[in-house]
Image 1 (tube, each protein chain N blue to C red):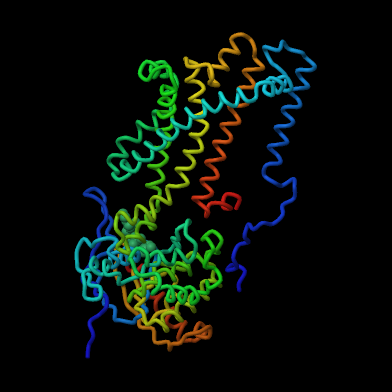
Image 2: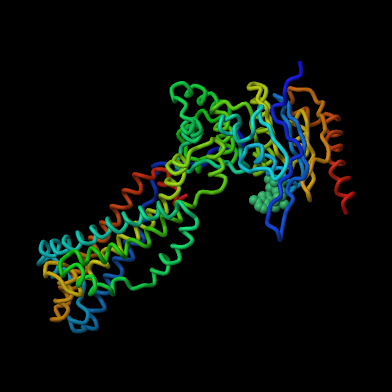
Length: 261
Length: 270
Ligand SMILES: Nc1ncnc2c1ncn2[C@@H]1O[C@H](COP(=O)(O)OP(=O)(O)O)[C@@H](O)[C@H]1O
Ligand SMILES: [Mg+2]
């Protein structure tokens, strides 16, 4: 029985600017994402990764084309709280403790605190912040702040997680551990995750499928299926197949650049 | 746990060395200035009306302490009244203005330019409008407090980062929720900076406005009268009382700030 894709993007373009100066951030992008996929968007900066994520999230509207999220228009999906968004910066509110930051979406959505508190505690424990409920953001390291923002995105149990370079600002060790934690979360919650990164290795390590994007104008150059078995662990990064896939993605990007000079 | 992931140390109630406490250095400077003042007056013996020694000022203060504190209280009440009206209207106006980018772009330049208008020079006009009594002073103080409070509050209410707002939109938050849960808390540091400045502004405004006329039991009138009959130690004593009320007012606002913004408490030292 074929299921409808959870996200369908059909010939979407986004053009910024006025009559004098325009930037084609995305041109004719089409992509379908199945439920439960962990899919990465990878490409150099300026290739429209953030733009695509914001269009899906209805934080921006396409100039052309159509997007469907869980069978709805993006605006309706946003109003039905079908996705959680994780920004590159943790975007925690300074005046809220970790716990109250993670509870923010529940407050906004008017979900009864009593019913959701257990889930909130579970999410904070899952991201390793069990002992930091009452800390303010400035008391946490960058990695912990980003984990708090992930707990916040998961607190209201959305079907989809949209993550825009969430680990981009972290050092390599913290980042690799966060990658493992994200895989754990994905395997335990079965969410659909759309993950933006400019690190090819991170994309290969995490994803079931990689969408390679190139700039000017932003578009999809190729999609690569990652056939490394789950669960993945530190050995995965030493698997010859891991290197082959990294090379394959890199070659795709190189071809695109060479072809455009 | 990797080092990069360890929580930063908390500024708990660790015992700091005496010399490192934040108030020690300013106190030391204060005492040094007073001591050298006393010493210089002793050595050069200028006429008392030109520069009385700190000890003489202290005598004058001690001799009429309750009366001066009473005058100070009257002046402080003018300052407080103007502060509440001016800052209150400033806050309300800012909330209306910040709703529209168009309106704030139109009005903010005027509000900022008003910083260079010597509002206190309008005190004689205020006396014509509101009478010689305290209300003319309250009016001047209110106008002086209004503009800085409004400008800061508009800046604060519009200071939330685009991502912080996008986060709220991603939850399909209502405008009211964005206002109460994001814009107001992000404006608080701006508001309190303005309020703290306005404590000083309001005492200065009330005293200077009193120079233009009023009843005798107010600090400004007292300072003016005593100085004009060359009883300068009395004038200095009144200035000390004005400082006392000004500082007490300032620290009352600091306490309110700490109470309303507990997250900000240790942060500045961080
Ligand atoms: N709000 C905007 N106004 C104008 N141009 C924009 C805006 N947002 C993005 N762009 C442009 O669109 C292009 C794609 O940006 P973005 O989606 O942020 O790329 P990425 O996330 O892959 O680095 C860039 O050239 C960028 O300058
Ligand atoms: Mg980006």
